[in-house]
Image 1 (cartoon, rainbow, N blue to C red):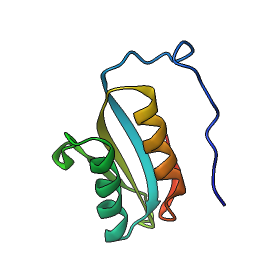
Image 2: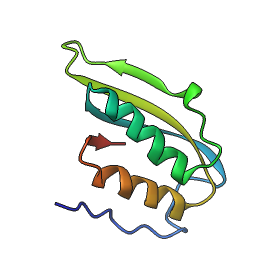
Image 3: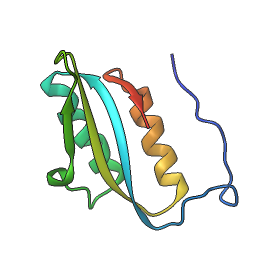
Length: 95
């Protein structure tokens, strides 16, 4: 099922662009999750550096959360990134 993000205009955005933006995603603790998130982030931010990614495992080891540091040029870039992340079958949630 495709998830649709609510529409927010540039005037309504509280984020000043361009900016560095931390994005948190969570999924199953499998190697493909981290790899796919890096691929998606790199597609939307050519300057993305995985060395800055913070990784944390759940207490049970079943889930992994990643904090990806994105350089966002505008709202459209962030919207497209969030949409691709939420469409990805490996992502449980993205904040």
